[in-house]
Length: 419
Image (cartoon, rainbow, N blue to C red; front, top):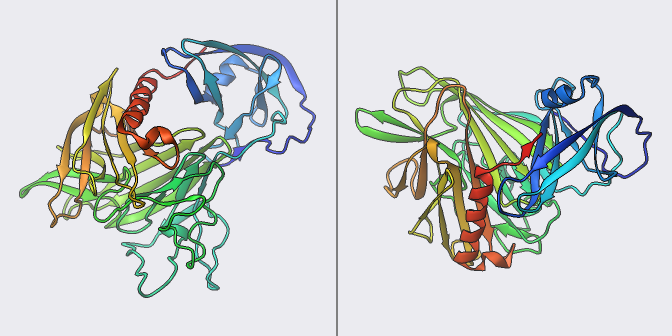
């Protein structure tokens, strides 16, 4: 669960192997693409470079210029599983890079563009160092801020960000996602919420908490839709779960990844419990996070639901382009009362339908939903998008936000090809 990279630019003997290959990265779309994530899985690299050993790296160069590469050990065995980099690609471009085995990563100065963290409150009121694995107390209630100034976790749970936007998950029975609107590209979430005299609900130089969550799913959190004798029920994740386990898989500078596993979730009385994992990724330069949700088994007639708030916005708009579909809202719906676009995209083949839940007596309400098909042990993937006008003036109009989502749908449908 570590990320390996050189972030200082200090020279280290590179000791590049004589075994060198060329790889080609292809942009199949008619769009220019910035900060596109390229993932080279170890198995694929090993096929290209059979001499690669468990504790070696690869150096990737473009016209003899070393590229910044992050090495992610996602399974925690001490050996990197994926080498990732961010590339700019023009429309239909084929970009040839050189890849070679090395004893060390290339010495490339890195700007940290992503971060994920979970921190616990200490007895003195401060917050400790980042914890990479954590378990939520059973049916952990939300913090009662009328009785205490600070929650048990910094900003109430895991937080993740890049140079465009940030998010947090309530590590309690609400299990909703919230949004940090950012006005600066640097990482801020180690400081936000640590001092109760500085409310993150007020606009600061860095930004603010821009989302009202209430009883909704907030920014793309999860619920299970099941049929019962009383009709369809929408059940939020987090309650009546044997264990809710957080695990950081990598943290910056290019990509951050973590997962939350809901083990033995007794979502309804008298039924077999489920184990579900969500794996959330964020990388530099993007206005979204990606979630990959995997079920150990799936109850008959059940589906996965995600969604976005309806506060201050009672109209949603649908998108369906090149096999990617979803919805978005756009209105003065930030907590700063300015323009905010919120959207969800997934593969059209995985979407069962859409809904708008407004019933006040239900556990989940005030949410526009996307209903997703699920199969056992097969991840369902969606992306949640944020466009705040104080982050980028392009989002000061609905047309600007919709243009971004339309481009994102095309890129989502046509990922980069690597040969």
